[in-house]
Length: 265
Ligand code: HEM
Image (cartoon, rainbow, N blue to C red; front, side):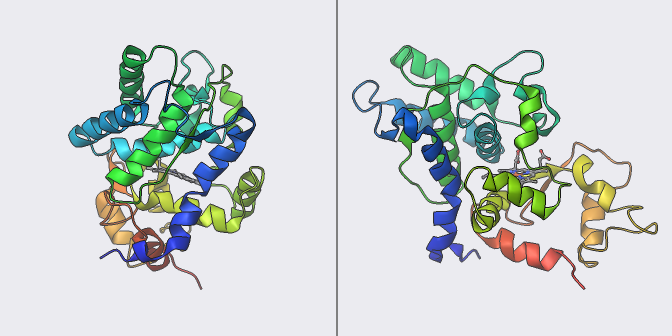
């Protein structure tokens, strides 16, 4: 059972990314209901599109939440992640496994039919991330809109993103650059309550890591479970829940799992 819904601090902090998105866009004048007159169905079109993609493929929800994060950390929440071409953000290693672009393209096509040239892709991404949390049984919240789309997308700028092999200090610094503190960092990583990771990204820690054995910072009781899911020299593209046993549902068990599955002397 997930009990985290009683903890408003978690959700307030979880919304920090989106608050950050709003702060970054503030100079451009974002507000809730920005499209109320120019495209009244904008938000319902995004929601129903995300919902229909989610119904046929639930992996779209975590995919879209992660795309929003990876967009916001590079040039702000300006949809620069969506730009195609050589050496764009999309092509950079941290973005190679992003999923869910098709839902955004679909929403944009429908919005262009309903209100040509009105709704930005940056807003679609923000709304779609909110809708993904809601569809996985997290909370719903009002999203300020009115973001402008960027035109610059450089693979080299993705060094802003925190890497999974980076130290905590370095991750803290990368968040601090956006005015986000350690509590924000911890809460936002709680997004890993939904979604999966590919074996190729972490199986190096399960075999021959130190002294021929697994990474000693993983709880020894959890190691065989992970080894069974990601066999040595097995399919590296196989995807494993980040929040063991609850990967489709937005809640706080990720944090409890994290304590259980790590091992500290
Ligand atoms: C703070 C440092 C963070 C690191 C190092 C990190 C790293 C990762 C890695 C390595 C994966 C697995 C990717 C894959 O195998 O495809 C992942 C997945 C994911 N991340 Fe993060 N992440 C961080 C923060 C965040 C934040 C702030 C959010 C959103 C608010 C987020 C949302 C997600 C989601 C939803 C997934 C699952 C994606 C899917 O199932 O397609 N992450 N992250």
